[in-house]
Length: 349
Image 1 (cartoon, rainbow, N blue to C red):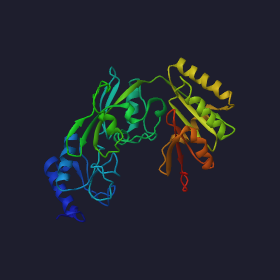
Image 2: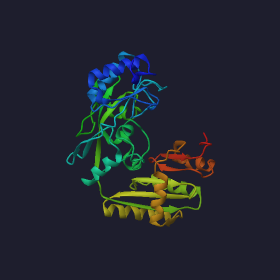
Image 3: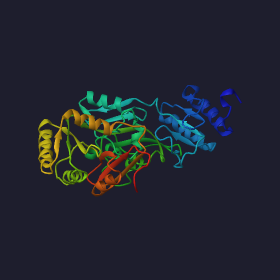
Image 4: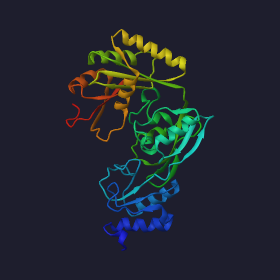
């Protein structure tokens, strides 16, 4: 056993040797001092290599996790340490941006900041994306969480038309089509894998819908009470045509921030309608600079986020009051609010 194999299980050493012989030493990083609690890390460049790694690991009964979700094994079990990590960071290319079909195919290791900039340069925007633009396409694709734009465009499963996946048995499949939605009989595998948290296979590529970029506008209102904020949410979600891209809120400051997108005329009309609605509550419009700061404070990524829950909008005020207003979040859809707390005591059940 050589120096890089010291402290590793015999099965993992056998996997490393077999992978070296199969895909080459340049695609392997040996973890020194730990790598997400695994014994070794592989950095493949294509789905075919991942398929070989999974087949070899399966032969030696070694657990595989990926950078898409390092907390769950590819076979669906909860990861308890050891085994191998498949790092998808090399698979970070924007493969094809189709301005006619309005889709973009991208590798799972690409970060959203790079993807969003590439789409914007062509006059398009993604529907929804993680609040943290340093997140990878793969981690977002297998999640079912709330992000920026979820209220208007839905979450990841609503914005992905196709996934390339290496399954637990080392098969390589595509779940849909790059240039057309899934409007046919049979299981919708794209939505199934999109909500799987990486437990059904390794997502290596994703094809997203694109939308014309238009203009963007943020504005905010402050309220006298949590009850008035609850009234505002109820009126907004029950309105037949008002559809903000994002609705962020901060209970401590009793502020709601609306983010709109579209043509200049549509944004102006939507802003006017929201303003008239808020005036009747009543609510006070705050400076646009304050609106941007509040939205940034609510939506920026935090490593300290300790508690996050989704609740029916009708119960939002009750939960916020129970937390003594020390919470913030977004409105996920017409029925659901996302509530986040940074405190140690957590959210009440």
